[in-house]
Picture 1 (tube, rainbow, N blue to C red):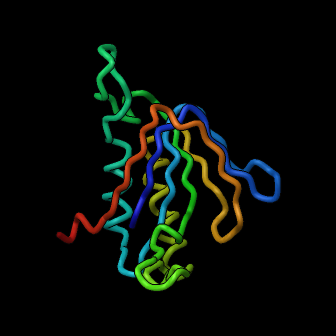
Picture 2 (picture 1 turned 30 degrees about the vertical axis):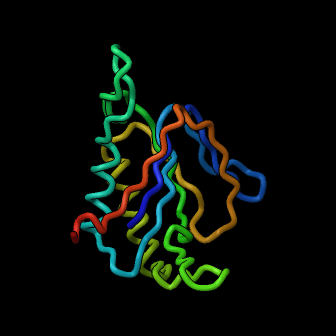
Picture 3 (picture 1 turned 135 degrees about the vertical axis):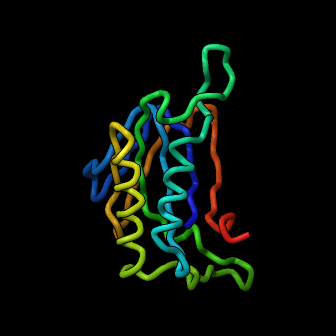
Length: 150
């Protein structure tokens, strides 16, 4: 699994002009699932994200997690995180999981977040979405569960 995590002061996702998910302070998480992922990766990644210490403490240091500040998460599926641009000019997405694997793992990841966070919103899987955000910092981190295998 891959996640692009952005610390935000606000974010929302719209489908056909209708807001489907919106949060204030927290993380916008763009999530991609690969063909080799399992529930182990979903759980590791969710736990890693909620415990990232990237919110400022009273001294102004990045020392607090999403759990510490009671923040929210907006999770948006994004198979293009597995786009391979090595050859030619058109990305290949063969590394991304097919929906029959990706949807249950995406949902497992979201459920894991919901078990510990006060608010978790989502986009709509396999639809065109408009995502808007105000990046706070800006702080943007890339996480990949390949770290588990290395």
